[in-house]
Image (tube, rainbow, N blue to C red; front, side, top):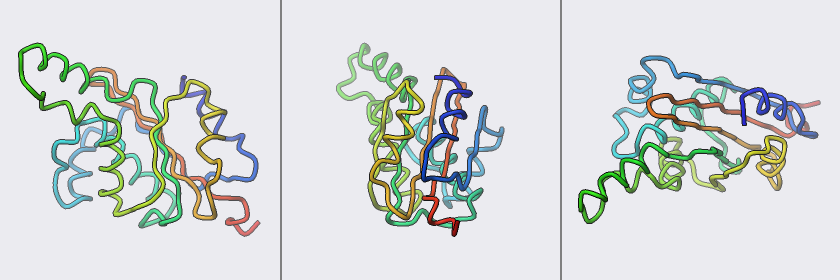
Length: 177
């Protein structure tokens, strides 16, 4: 799925409005330092893919003028590739005979969700999705979301190149319209 498909799909979710939309493609050169400042310390052992998710989520909340993700908000993260770099590193380490490769945990998309929840000081309904159809992704992510809305992210990593795109969705009624 390319960026144009995501952007087109983002504008076509009846009953919802976009409170914020941020793209880091690529992220700024100092993004990992900025994330460490925001969190008070460098994230440990979560991997670049999950760090990028955390950075993008904070950027989106900032753009929406929110200091926290409301407890009733849904959190959805999507990717076609997932944490591929960590998975490849894990397989390489496994071939060397290590009993549990260090990168194994970083290869698990669920670790990214836990890192997001901890980094955002949030607890709620979160999931990782794999989807090629942007309109379906948007509709599925919003399905069942309540008045606190939805934070939706798309993360891709190809080698050292990383791309993050985030939307903060709120129901139309929440806008006072």
